[in-house]
Image (cartoon, rainbow, N blue to C red; front, side):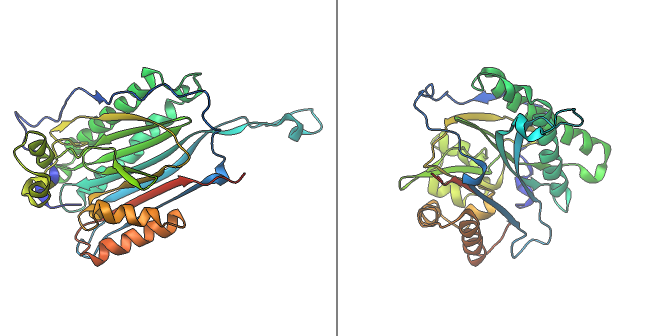
Length: 314
Protein backbone atom coordinates (compact mmCIF):
# COMPACT_ATOMS: atom_id res chain seq x y z
CA UNK A 1 0.00 0.00 0.00
CA UNK A 2 1.17 3.51 -0.81
CA UNK A 3 0.70 6.83 1.02
CA UNK A 4 -2.78 8.25 1.45
CA UNK A 5 -2.66 10.38 -1.77
CA UNK A 6 -2.64 7.13 -3.72
CA UNK A 7 -6.26 6.46 -2.76
CA UNK A 8 -7.44 8.02 -6.00
CA UNK A 9 -7.36 11.18 -8.04
CA UNK A 10 -9.67 13.99 -6.80
CA UNK A 11 -13.25 13.39 -7.96
CA UNK A 12 -14.50 15.69 -10.71
CA UNK A 13 -17.97 16.00 -9.21
CA UNK A 14 -19.36 14.33 -6.10
CA UNK A 15 -16.92 11.39 -6.14
CA UNK A 16 -19.70 8.87 -6.66
CA UNK A 17 -17.28 6.38 -8.15
CA UNK A 18 -18.27 6.89 -11.77
CA UNK A 19 -17.08 4.31 -14.28
CA UNK A 20 -15.37 5.45 -17.44
CA UNK A 21 -16.13 3.39 -20.56
CA UNK A 22 -14.03 0.24 -20.57
CA UNK A 23 -11.18 0.30 -23.06
CA UNK A 24 -9.85 -2.54 -25.16
CA UNK A 25 -6.35 -2.65 -26.57
CA UNK A 26 -5.89 -3.35 -30.29
CA UNK A 27 -6.23 -7.05 -31.01
CA UNK A 28 -3.25 -9.19 -31.82
CA UNK A 29 -3.13 -10.85 -35.25
CA UNK A 30 -5.12 -14.03 -35.70
CA UNK A 31 -3.25 -16.96 -34.22
CA UNK A 32 -1.62 -19.15 -36.91
CA UNK A 33 -2.71 -22.77 -37.16
CA UNK A 34 0.91 -23.81 -36.69
CA UNK A 35 0.99 -22.77 -33.02
CA UNK A 36 2.50 -25.44 -30.82
CA UNK A 37 0.42 -27.45 -28.39
CA UNK A 38 -0.98 -26.20 -25.09
CA UNK A 39 1.42 -26.72 -22.16
CA UNK A 40 0.68 -29.62 -19.84
CA UNK A 41 0.15 -28.93 -16.14
CA UNK A 42 3.58 -30.31 -15.30
CA UNK A 43 5.16 -27.94 -17.84
CA UNK A 44 3.95 -24.82 -16.02
CA UNK A 45 6.45 -23.26 -13.61
CA UNK A 46 4.68 -20.54 -11.63
CA UNK A 47 5.09 -19.00 -8.19
CA UNK A 48 3.76 -16.05 -6.24
CA UNK A 49 4.52 -14.35 -2.94
CA UNK A 50 3.62 -11.28 -0.92
CA UNK A 51 5.48 -9.44 1.84
CA UNK A 52 4.55 -6.57 4.15
CA UNK A 53 7.87 -4.80 3.53
CA UNK A 54 10.10 -3.09 6.06
CA UNK A 55 7.99 -0.02 6.80
CA UNK A 56 4.28 -0.95 6.69
CA UNK A 57 2.64 -2.81 9.55
CA UNK A 58 -0.25 -4.20 7.47
CA UNK A 59 -0.04 -6.01 4.14
CA UNK A 60 -2.80 -4.65 1.91
CA UNK A 61 -1.70 -6.62 -1.17
CA UNK A 62 -3.39 -9.85 -2.28
CA UNK A 63 -2.61 -12.39 -4.99
CA UNK A 64 -4.13 -15.57 -6.39
CA UNK A 65 -3.01 -18.36 -8.73
CA UNK A 66 -5.58 -20.86 -10.01
CA UNK A 67 -6.49 -23.25 -12.81
CA UNK A 68 -9.99 -23.35 -14.29
CA UNK A 69 -10.92 -26.88 -15.33
CA UNK A 70 -13.49 -28.78 -17.35
CA UNK A 71 -14.27 -32.19 -15.93
CA UNK A 72 -16.90 -34.85 -15.40
CA UNK A 73 -17.13 -36.76 -12.14
CA UNK A 74 -18.89 -40.13 -12.16
CA UNK A 75 -21.02 -40.60 -9.04
CA UNK A 76 -22.64 -43.96 -9.84
CA UNK A 77 -22.50 -46.39 -12.78
CA UNK A 78 -22.93 -50.05 -13.68
CA UNK A 79 -19.78 -49.97 -15.79
CA UNK A 80 -17.09 -52.31 -14.46
CA UNK A 81 -14.14 -49.99 -15.07
CA UNK A 82 -14.64 -46.21 -14.91
CA UNK A 83 -11.01 -45.59 -15.87
CA UNK A 84 -11.83 -46.78 -19.40
CA UNK A 85 -14.02 -43.70 -19.85
CA UNK A 86 -10.92 -41.50 -20.07
CA UNK A 87 -12.72 -38.68 -18.30
CA UNK A 88 -11.45 -35.23 -19.16
CA UNK A 89 -9.88 -33.02 -16.54
CA UNK A 90 -8.54 -30.57 -19.07
CA UNK A 91 -7.28 -27.15 -18.00
CA UNK A 92 -9.48 -24.54 -19.65
CA UNK A 93 -7.55 -21.55 -18.41
CA UNK A 94 -4.90 -20.42 -15.97
CA UNK A 95 -5.64 -17.43 -13.76
CA UNK A 96 -3.25 -15.08 -11.96
CA UNK A 97 -4.35 -11.95 -10.07
CA UNK A 98 -2.80 -9.26 -7.92
CA UNK A 99 -4.40 -6.35 -6.08
CA UNK A 100 -2.79 -3.50 -4.14
CA UNK A 101 -5.22 -1.99 -1.66
CA UNK A 102 -5.25 1.68 -0.71
CA UNK A 103 -7.28 3.68 1.75
CA UNK A 104 -5.47 3.95 5.05
CA UNK A 105 -5.38 1.61 8.06
CA UNK A 106 -6.55 -1.86 7.05
CA UNK A 107 -9.17 -0.58 4.60
CA UNK A 108 -6.98 -1.27 1.60
CA UNK A 109 -6.68 -4.90 2.67
CA UNK A 110 -10.47 -5.17 2.64
CA UNK A 111 -10.67 -3.65 -0.84
CA UNK A 112 -7.99 -5.90 -2.33
CA UNK A 113 -9.55 -8.99 -0.74
CA UNK A 114 -13.00 -8.09 -2.06
CA UNK A 115 -11.56 -7.48 -5.53
CA UNK A 116 -9.98 -10.91 -5.83
CA UNK A 117 -13.01 -12.66 -4.34
CA UNK A 118 -15.43 -10.90 -6.68
CA UNK A 119 -13.39 -11.43 -9.84
CA UNK A 120 -12.86 -15.10 -9.00
CA UNK A 121 -16.58 -15.57 -8.44
CA UNK A 122 -17.58 -13.70 -11.60
CA UNK A 123 -15.11 -15.48 -13.87
CA UNK A 124 -16.04 -18.89 -12.47
CA UNK A 125 -19.73 -18.22 -13.04
CA UNK A 126 -18.92 -17.21 -16.62
CA UNK A 127 -17.26 -20.50 -17.55
CA UNK A 128 -19.40 -20.70 -20.68
CA UNK A 129 -16.82 -18.42 -22.28
CA UNK A 130 -14.15 -21.07 -21.84
CA UNK A 131 -16.37 -23.76 -23.37
CA UNK A 132 -16.87 -21.76 -26.56
CA UNK A 133 -15.18 -22.89 -29.74
CA UNK A 134 -13.57 -19.49 -30.12
CA UNK A 135 -12.15 -17.83 -26.99
CA UNK A 136 -11.19 -14.81 -29.08
CA UNK A 137 -14.73 -13.55 -29.40
CA UNK A 138 -15.60 -10.10 -28.12
CA UNK A 139 -17.83 -11.58 -25.42
CA UNK A 140 -14.75 -12.94 -23.64
CA UNK A 141 -13.25 -9.46 -23.41
CA UNK A 142 -16.60 -8.14 -22.26
CA UNK A 143 -16.66 -10.70 -19.44
CA UNK A 144 -13.36 -9.34 -18.13
CA UNK A 145 -14.50 -5.74 -18.39
CA UNK A 146 -17.75 -6.54 -16.63
CA UNK A 147 -15.85 -8.40 -13.93
CA UNK A 148 -13.91 -5.22 -13.17
CA UNK A 149 -16.99 -2.99 -13.24
CA UNK A 150 -19.02 -5.30 -11.00
CA UNK A 151 -16.10 -5.60 -8.61
CA UNK A 152 -15.83 -1.81 -8.56
CA UNK A 153 -19.53 -1.55 -7.69
CA UNK A 154 -19.20 -4.17 -4.95
CA UNK A 155 -16.29 -2.36 -3.29
CA UNK A 156 -18.25 0.90 -3.39
CA UNK A 157 -21.28 -0.87 -1.89
CA UNK A 158 -19.26 -2.21 1.03
CA UNK A 159 -17.73 1.21 1.63
CA UNK A 160 -21.18 2.83 1.68
CA UNK A 161 -22.35 0.41 4.39
CA UNK A 162 -19.47 1.02 6.77
CA UNK A 163 -18.13 4.53 7.48
CA UNK A 164 -14.83 2.99 8.59
CA UNK A 165 -14.30 1.71 5.04
CA UNK A 166 -14.92 5.05 3.34
CA UNK A 167 -12.23 5.83 0.77
CA UNK A 168 -10.97 2.28 0.35
CA UNK A 169 -9.90 1.25 -3.14
CA UNK A 170 -7.51 -1.12 -4.87
CA UNK A 171 -5.58 -1.77 -8.02
CA UNK A 172 -6.39 -4.94 -9.94
CA UNK A 173 -4.40 -6.83 -12.56
CA UNK A 174 -5.80 -10.11 -13.86
CA UNK A 175 -3.94 -12.50 -16.20
CA UNK A 176 -5.93 -15.26 -17.90
CA UNK A 177 -4.28 -17.76 -20.22
CA UNK A 178 -6.73 -19.44 -22.61
CA UNK A 179 -4.51 -21.21 -25.11
CA UNK A 180 -3.37 -19.85 -27.52
CA UNK A 181 -4.18 -16.42 -26.07
CA UNK A 182 -3.42 -14.39 -22.97
CA UNK A 183 -5.88 -11.78 -21.71
CA UNK A 184 -4.80 -9.10 -19.25
CA UNK A 185 -7.26 -6.91 -17.34
CA UNK A 186 -5.80 -3.90 -15.57
CA UNK A 187 -7.13 -1.17 -13.29
CA UNK A 188 -4.55 0.97 -11.47
CA UNK A 189 -0.78 0.63 -11.54
CA UNK A 190 0.02 -2.99 -10.71
CA UNK A 191 2.12 -4.03 -13.68
CA UNK A 192 2.38 -6.94 -16.08
CA UNK A 193 5.65 -7.60 -17.92
CA UNK A 194 6.68 -10.13 -20.56
CA UNK A 195 10.31 -11.20 -20.88
CA UNK A 196 11.46 -13.00 -24.03
CA UNK A 197 14.75 -13.38 -25.88
CA UNK A 198 16.58 -10.78 -23.82
CA UNK A 199 13.83 -8.15 -23.99
CA UNK A 200 11.52 -6.99 -21.21
CA UNK A 201 8.21 -5.50 -22.34
CA UNK A 202 5.88 -3.64 -20.00
CA UNK A 203 2.45 -4.54 -21.32
CA UNK A 204 0.31 -2.51 -18.92
CA UNK A 205 0.20 1.25 -18.65
CA UNK A 206 0.23 2.82 -15.17
CA UNK A 207 -3.13 4.45 -14.51
CA UNK A 208 -1.69 7.32 -12.48
CA UNK A 209 -1.79 11.10 -12.73
CA UNK A 210 1.97 11.07 -13.33
CA UNK A 211 1.59 8.78 -16.36
CA UNK A 212 -1.14 11.01 -17.76
CA UNK A 213 1.19 14.01 -17.41
CA UNK A 214 3.90 12.06 -19.23
CA UNK A 215 1.45 11.19 -22.01
CA UNK A 216 0.63 14.90 -22.39
CA UNK A 217 4.29 15.87 -22.49
CA UNK A 218 4.09 17.81 -19.21
CA UNK A 219 6.56 15.53 -17.39
CA UNK A 220 9.45 13.36 -18.53
CA UNK A 221 9.46 9.73 -17.41
CA UNK A 222 12.33 10.49 -15.04
CA UNK A 223 10.51 13.44 -13.49
CA UNK A 224 7.30 11.41 -13.24
CA UNK A 225 8.99 8.65 -11.23
CA UNK A 226 9.98 11.13 -8.52
CA UNK A 227 6.80 13.20 -8.74
CA UNK A 228 4.17 13.22 -5.98
CA UNK A 229 1.69 12.38 -8.76
CA UNK A 230 3.32 8.97 -9.22
CA UNK A 231 1.36 7.72 -6.20
CA UNK A 232 -2.01 9.16 -7.24
CA UNK A 233 -4.18 6.69 -9.14
CA UNK A 234 -6.30 8.03 -11.99
CA UNK A 235 -8.28 4.77 -12.07
CA UNK A 236 -8.97 2.30 -9.26
CA UNK A 237 -11.45 -0.34 -8.17
CA UNK A 238 -13.57 1.55 -5.63
CA UNK A 239 -12.06 4.93 -6.52
CA UNK A 240 -13.75 8.04 -7.95
CA UNK A 241 -13.15 6.66 -11.44
CA UNK A 242 -12.40 3.24 -12.87
CA UNK A 243 -11.32 2.51 -16.44
CA UNK A 244 -10.70 -1.22 -17.03
CA UNK A 245 -8.23 -1.94 -19.81
CA UNK A 246 -8.12 -5.34 -21.51
CA UNK A 247 -5.16 -6.43 -23.63
CA UNK A 248 -4.95 -9.62 -25.69
CA UNK A 249 -1.62 -11.26 -26.52
CA UNK A 250 -0.64 -14.41 -28.36
CA UNK A 251 0.80 -17.12 -26.14
CA UNK A 252 4.39 -18.21 -26.67
CA UNK A 253 6.38 -20.93 -24.96
CA UNK A 254 9.36 -18.58 -24.73
CA UNK A 255 7.53 -15.95 -22.67
CA UNK A 256 8.23 -15.34 -18.99
CA UNK A 257 5.37 -13.51 -17.29
CA UNK A 258 5.71 -11.14 -14.33
CA UNK A 259 2.93 -9.44 -12.37
CA UNK A 260 3.82 -7.14 -9.50
CA UNK A 261 2.61 -4.35 -7.26
CA UNK A 262 4.54 -1.09 -7.10
CA UNK A 263 6.30 -2.23 -3.95
CA UNK A 264 8.70 -4.01 -6.31
CA UNK A 265 9.14 -1.34 -8.98
CA UNK A 266 9.75 1.46 -6.46
CA UNK A 267 13.06 -0.20 -5.64
CA UNK A 268 13.95 -2.48 -8.55
CA UNK A 269 14.41 -1.02 -12.03
CA UNK A 270 13.11 -2.59 -15.22
CA UNK A 271 16.71 -3.25 -16.25
CA UNK A 272 17.38 -5.15 -13.04
CA UNK A 273 14.13 -7.10 -13.41
CA UNK A 274 15.23 -8.08 -16.92
CA UNK A 275 18.59 -9.29 -15.63
CA UNK A 276 16.93 -11.39 -12.95
CA UNK A 277 14.48 -13.00 -15.39
CA UNK A 278 17.28 -13.69 -17.88
CA UNK A 279 19.16 -15.82 -15.35
CA UNK A 280 16.23 -17.42 -13.50
CA UNK A 281 16.36 -21.11 -12.66
CA UNK A 282 12.77 -21.33 -11.40
CA UNK A 283 9.77 -19.11 -10.78
CA UNK A 284 10.16 -19.54 -7.02
CA UNK A 285 13.85 -18.59 -7.09
CA UNK A 286 13.38 -15.43 -9.14
CA UNK A 287 10.39 -14.28 -7.04
CA UNK A 288 12.44 -14.64 -3.88
CA UNK A 289 15.45 -12.88 -5.44
CA UNK A 290 13.34 -9.94 -6.63
CA UNK A 291 11.68 -9.68 -3.22
CA UNK A 292 15.07 -9.54 -1.53
CA UNK A 293 16.22 -6.77 -3.88
CA UNK A 294 13.11 -4.73 -3.07
CA UNK A 295 13.70 -5.21 0.65
CA UNK A 296 17.38 -4.32 0.29
CA UNK A 297 16.32 -1.18 -1.56
CA UNK A 298 14.23 -0.01 1.38
CA UNK A 299 11.02 -2.06 1.30
CA UNK A 300 8.88 1.05 1.81
CA UNK A 301 5.72 -0.64 0.57
CA UNK A 302 4.01 -4.01 0.47
CA UNK A 303 5.57 -6.22 -2.20
CA UNK A 304 3.74 -8.81 -4.29
CA UNK A 305 5.27 -10.74 -7.18
CA UNK A 306 4.04 -13.48 -9.52
CA UNK A 307 6.31 -15.11 -12.11
CA UNK A 308 5.27 -17.81 -14.56
CA UNK A 309 6.76 -19.62 -17.54
CA UNK A 310 6.45 -22.88 -19.45
CA UNK A 311 9.17 -25.53 -19.55
CA UNK A 312 8.80 -28.20 -22.24
CA UNK A 313 9.14 -31.79 -21.08
CA UNK A 314 9.32 -33.43 -24.53
